[in-house]
Image 1 (cartoon, rainbow, N blue to C red):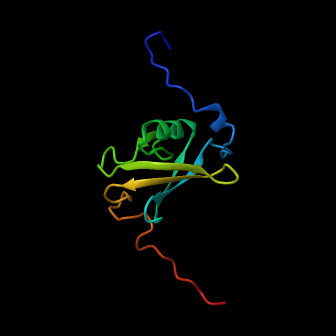
Image 2: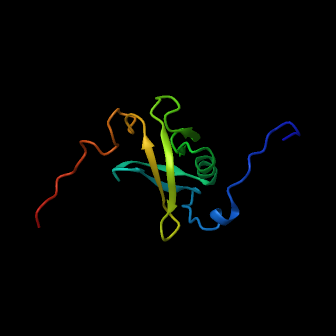
Image 3: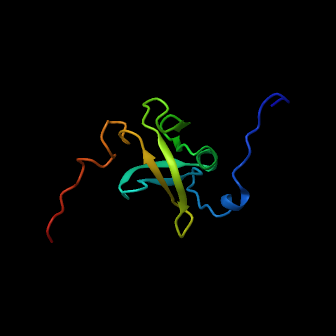
Length: 123
């Protein structure tokens, strides 16, 4: 890295110290519509994705399949405006409350869980 290469600030050390990441350095991010409470999707974040989300107000995730960061809506236009971010009691899951613009799922459905309910058996 030379003097002209910008260096992004790291995640606040006080926040980073609270996180319990998996072996790949990731946390699951449960994404919820802020006003209805509806669960929209599950994504993954590392420290940098969380930092970007907190500082820009745009939901940013780590794509495990593409091995790159992605801002929800950057290609589809279906952005997620972040309203709040919370850690669970163990620090191993992030809850991201958003105002979803358009469908949340890459398949075009409102949530990633639309039409995918599994049947419950009787015991």
